[in-house]
Image (cartoon, rainbow, N blue to C red; front, side, top):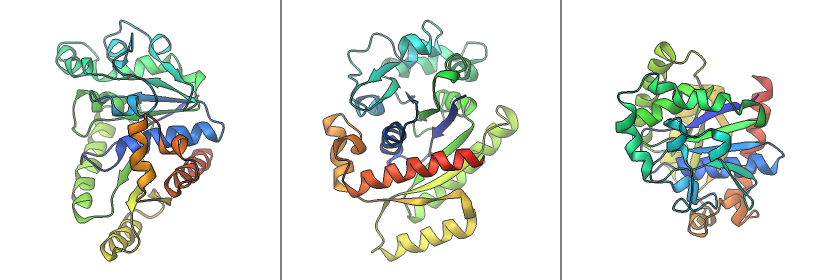
Length: 256
């Protein structure tokens, strides 16, 4: 049965999409069956997984409006080794179209139930805002992976996200919890980053993943080639860190 995780943070530019595609590729490399769901109308996770968002016949938009199933809409990315339920600009319209619909926040959950046996992990890349799309992701998930930079403003955004997760847990999804915080774009030479990292560990304890993703040029270059860093340059420090993170994720799930 698939474990479903949202990669979410209400602060933009913290590496959510980079985390989603590289974790998906890392999990595929360590032998897991993975579905990556792109819930952001920009479609960056789709393009970063080697899938052309402009050429897709069916997308997550069709799944949310129940005109296609996940099995029909998901595309296998040969280069990356995982399935992609892609997004494009059409998805922005889904926000408006879902307003009048019954069970609108549970559309994705119902759709994913149909393929739960086919995957070990489902990773959902959420948009930075708390929208109907993000809510669909949070209602579907067993837990949230929070990528964050070790900076002061990131701590402010984390407080908002924790409150959102508490509200969704109380009202819509009793399974939802924070699986862990992933420190990304980390530079140990910057004293402030080290201090914030220590604060996170003191406050959240074992909810902070052991793996730390370093600031890495190769990870930043990879999307322009339409690939996760793990596939683009497996030997790069950032790619190695994501493979270690994938192994830590598998281990953490076994213990849950």
